[in-house]
Image (tube, rainbow, N blue to C red; front, side):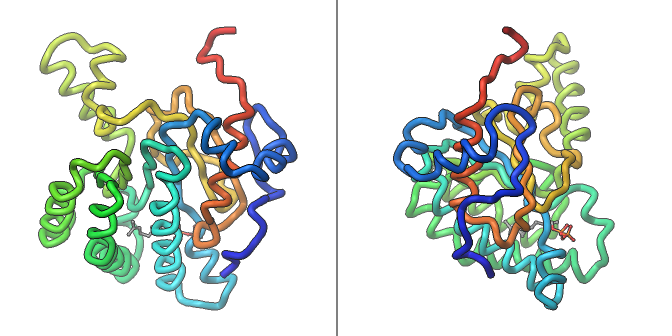
Length: 258
Ligand code: FPP
């Protein structure tokens, strides 16, 4: 593990705005970032568990396990960074194509995560939200998730986990619902997305050096800032998130205006 690694990731690539140097300078003052980055909603495509495992000559399952530890670290840190919502891509609707034993490992990790971390969510005021068609998961997982949703519903900070999620399907579902209840507009589609109750997406991060959206939050990312880093997901720490937030803080967002 490289948890003790420098928070500065020289390989981080910014699609627009600040240089990685200016983002790096800003990471010196944690309080400043917390007070001033301005982001409410950050989403992460957590990629690179398999490559992390390969790099360390370990089975893929260990990479996923370390990936869950990275999730736990970030959930603990999110509130202290002033975020209202952290959305994590844990299992896509395309991930069913993976070998059965890997899908089963991921579902086992999800079960274990809910069991071991639910009380911490409750104690720390973290509301769990699920986006995606989670009802298609194993019935025991659906029951555990629904119990967790109920127990955490009052939390002021949201951690939204994407499970069996595909953005194109989500948009199609939302458009169909919008059509059934009136006019199809950008607003009526947005109001029927799984994310309707979340703040607008500010920053979308992808780890592991891949530079694509992979059917994640396509609609919601319309005006989000993008941040790509070569850090493999199991190595991603709250310090890396602070670096991404510093980069976000340095960008000029125009939402199509000038
Ligand atoms: C990508 O790594 C990661 C995933 C497909 C799953 C992400 C899941 C976790 C971090 C753990 C489960 C989360 C919770 C909340 C229990 P990859 O396997 O595609 O890596 P690779 O591209 O290097 O092979």
